Length: 310
Image (tube, rainbow, N blue to C red; front, side, top):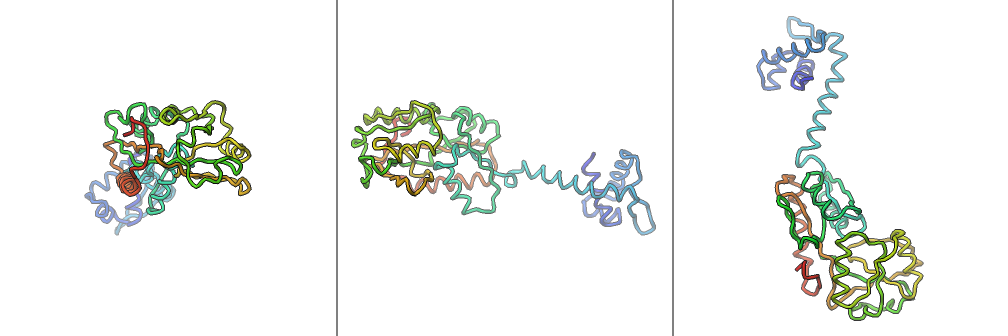
């Protein structure tokens, strides 16, 4: 069904005149009449009864009118769904508990009127996520880009925008529980437990960190979820894990867990935002500028990153 014809039919029904409808639509009266006549032939019914001072809907025209209006509304929704600036901006935050999610939330709080679709491709590796960006099914994602030394495929762009500072998470009976800060040198005698890690990007990063500072970082074993990990750490005298400063985890107050900043230097997990160079979405442009401004304000020199991230 020709949407122009449907739109003309609705305009004539609302104005009661072909000339008035044609003026509203910016076409000639002849063109408006032709559109309606074509629609009538297609449907096999008469939609208007011609009168001396205009037209009125026939019974068939009255039956069609609400459906025609809904059809036009559906077409408007379909157009809005793919119009940059009107459709929702679709961002992959990898995991809803880590820094990218919280940074995106802070951006949304400053721009509460925007349409936003937040997804978490927790089980997708970097190559898969970048393929989604290239295909246009995502507007942006956050990755370390370790495997490619921060290079991205042709047509994509990247910018390092998050340095997630590490903290040590321990229970109240751990030897370091009362420390205000801890150095990487001090951690050589305390194994770090991060079970169930399967993504090559973070696994490679923690291998780099362990080798650089002589740490023992155990990623072997299944993951039973963050809640199970936290419960075991809370009850242990030796287990500890790394969490990002920008991550948000909840646990019962009775666990009495401690988040201890790692210093001198502070290891950071470097994250880049990746997007398509030809993506015209205006909210994406605003988000990228927000990320750059935030990074300039929060980055510092007292941090450690692997060589591929420098």
